[in-house]
Length: 428
Image 1: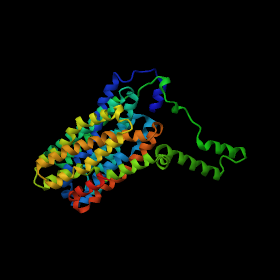
Image 2: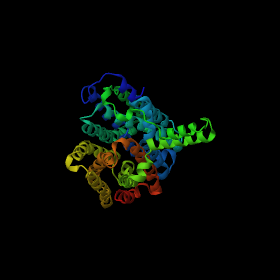
Image 3: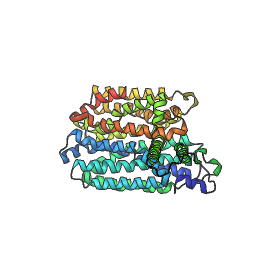
Image 4: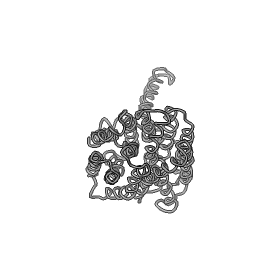
């Protein structure tokens, strides 16, 4: 049963109160389990290298595939949500995530890890995360901005807790048993999905776009039928298939907006380029610190510091940018955050001492909070809301491509080239 069908059949239930807050709590946990999970991969980077005798480039493909699929599976998730509803998509994602991590604990080669932890876990995390964000739009109207800001703290909690838990389990049990435990932890996405029951809205609150519209290709088909053409004529069938294919691409991947809206075009290209180096610290910061003499537990603590500061800065940034003073000016705040994100890497060039790396994490976390809180809000400013879901589909697919190749592009130098790439891509 789809979300729209559930909305259309029942009596009205109150939004912004009651069970909506339980759904918000589930969304917080969900974002910590999914979007916050890839940050802990850097803890296992050296062990995976030694286990599979792999190079930096080969090992880096594993987190790259996971993050790229997590961001790029949006259109597929949208189809699942429209067909089966948010609850089904979240629970299916939890099953895939758990299955992927359990399977990865039995991998015998790095290429098998690409498939299990990279593709399967990444796709499951995508389903759970994006469906969990979508369901907040059904449960919250008046407090929607606040709900999204609070839900985003789950990512920060994930950044804080995942590295610490990973380092502890790695020291006690090894990476294979740790991945097995992570599979069980990620199954809790199914519990969060069970909480997100379909909401029933009043019929008057349904969007007008829910009414069936005449397809653009239907008139052309009717015209040919009126001229005596058979509906089974090969030429007409090919034309109909091409029309339906174009409609699907326009619905889920807004190529027409990309060509016509210069603001959306420039913003999408800029963010896509930025993502080439945005994820590098989550993977390379820990091995970079340990290589320069920092203890492993302290090195894992660096990622947790980034997440802990995010808990407070990200919601504050989201609420601040929602003020009417910044209406139409959020792009400048976003640009400032991206600039600070790139400039912060000069701190690591100066020194690799633990105290200096803490200062780097503080500044980087403030900048990343701004980027994380403003990315989609700025997108809403440059695209009309009735086409936002389509624009978001193309946006996430393009950024997933650069997320996929960003880590492997560092090559055999690994974290030694991270600082240069982060500066160049972060300040484009």
